[in-house]
Length: 165
Image 1 (cartoon, one colour):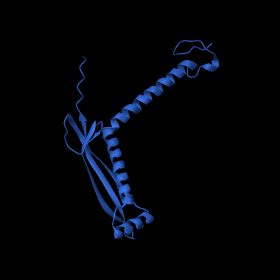
Image 2 (cartoon, rainbow, N blue to C red):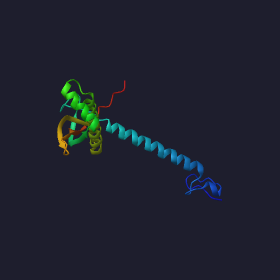
Image 3 (cartoon, rainbow, N blue to C red):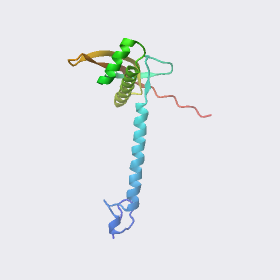
Image 4 (cartoon, rainbow, N blue to C red):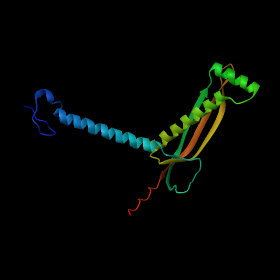
């Protein structure tokens, strides 16, 4: 009769896979899932780093600058949107189409910067700046817009432990 290599329990032939009984396999799977969830939570916490447009802030003890992180987003409008933007340009007024495109590009660039900073082991990204420029493309004078976000990935001193009352 087979014996589980983990718990030593005797079990049937069909219940042992890779030397483990059904109960030990289930516990091992649950342990792996818990560890995976903890790793995902740690990665999310690292990605949700402090994001600042300033170099310093009160109570922000920067101990090491890890380097510059940047992200570029280039976008173009399809022919219909491009046509409506041209009409809005002639008529004047607010262009919701371009505003949304810029907002999406800026949001994507920030997410990219957070990811890149996290990969460096950063706790925060400081001195973030955004620039944009228009890029001429194609033979019909269509244009694309590039949004660039840059910042400095930094590590922070650990927060002091709260004293017990």
